[in-house]
Image (tube, rainbow, N blue to C red; front, side, top):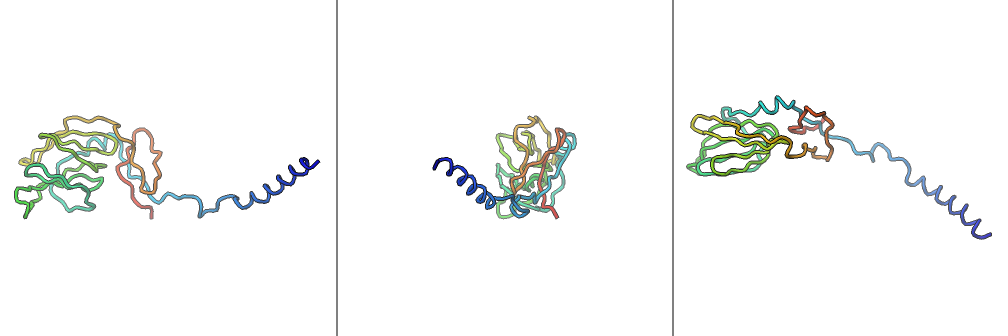
Length: 166
């Protein structure tokens, strides 16, 4: 008989305590604070260009190879400097490559992560010319927002950056 009384009592206590957990209110639900900057695959691949020097917006990693210095402008590309005189580096150009955050150099080949792709290119600082020699598509995952959210953007769209929502 005691066992029969324990079950309803346990059920009643569990029911009363469940209100403590309740439904989360709006403050408990995580919100997306960023929105993705998207490009189509065609725009993305055609956006790699050598441009005139410009100001750095958000600097990232710095790389030095021989007489060249590369400074990443996060998710925008790389600023290239003549570094033959480290006391006075001279701006040469800006390599526009949307979604880029990292670079590796070996011999005269530059390896860049362009958002989801791995791109190799040759750069000639004398004529400010670049030549994309290879692109391996979808080597890296899509970029994730700083608050941890990801974008459901379709198969032809690539996230190149995240900007704060207004």
